Amino acid sequence: MATVKPEPARSRPPRDLDPAEITLVTRLRAEDEGALAAFEERYGRVLTGFLRDSLPDPGTAEEVRQQVLTEIWRRGADYDPARSSILTWALMIARSRAADERRRRRPTPIDPTTIEESGEDPELDGLLDRWRVAALLERIPAGEAGVLRLRFYEGLSQSEIAARTGVPLGTVKTRMIRGLARLRELIAEEGVR
Image (cartoon, rainbow, N blue to C red; front, side, top):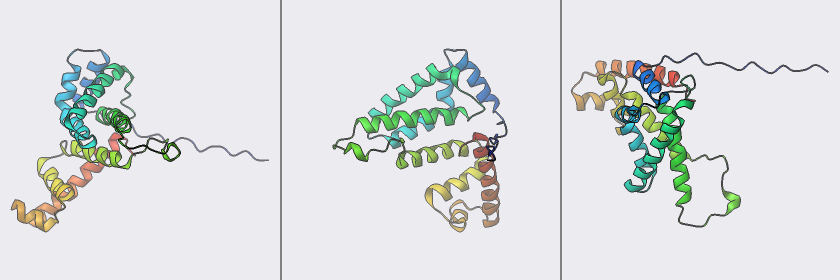
């Protein structure tokens, strides 16, 4: 009987790390007291926005945000830049803590045989993707990010974007094409599936 060899694991190309991210990772690993402040300065808006959209009230979101920051601090030395960006890593921690909080606060009884054990939560996953894209849009040129925000978040057509912004339609199309290409590159760098 012939043995079947497993396919070799596909390796991802190494991510190009942003110098600011390298500095932040180094500071977290060294347990630099200012590392969390630097993390919050760079990613705090995205983290807070995701948690406020995910949880029932701002007070709960703030409690969970503090839990996430504590966990980032405790687990900073375990972060592996080859696997994902620090933002993706932090948002996955935030997603887990938000899911824990949502399960803990369920107001109605649930039949235990219907609970999904995979931890999947389509609503949280959608919010996570939305905030991850919002953070990535901040890393591309403003003109390109602006047209993509109007398209993704407001649902405007290219003609409507041109009319609203006063930018010629051809320029809107060019910015959208370039912005989408940059966004795809950033998503690929993140290593997010």
